[in-house]
Length: 192
Image (cartoon, rainbow, N blue to C red; front, top):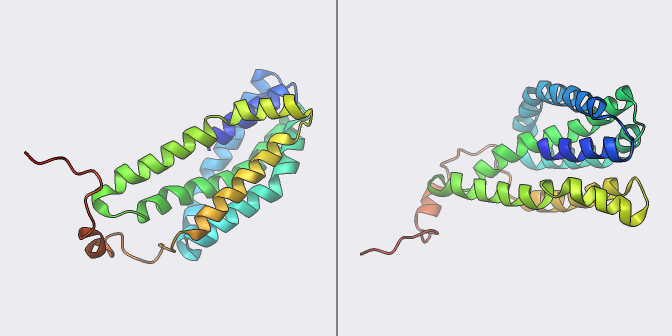
């Protein structure tokens, strides 16, 4: 959610020529809205499963991206707020399901390390560079909506990867421990 918020914040200022205060207030409003959505999204993800939630997140982002960027590019507070809230829906769904999904993909003994590594490497590559890439795309193409196209491409890539994962919502976290127990230790220390 924070990486989306940063790139959207940058977009409001660069394209919409919104003041820093306007962009910050719109971002703050969207973050409050996003926080209120989290429990509902969590219930949804538990009810329909992780894969359908990933599909929902991607669909919401793809559908909302052009209207959201158009509103954010207006430079007006209310329009920027609505645009940020539109983007927040998909971002929240994505964020809520990612935390649980990553935990469910790894055995207990490596769960924290493996999920933290996957999340943080992806976050650094895609989220950390988003404001820079958005600004670069606008300068390079002259199209103020080029960051929206970039976001759609990243969303399609995430959906492709997420839908390839096994459904994990209705199994116990330690259900597959016996299978994992016999696998070689991924980070074995040499014995002395």
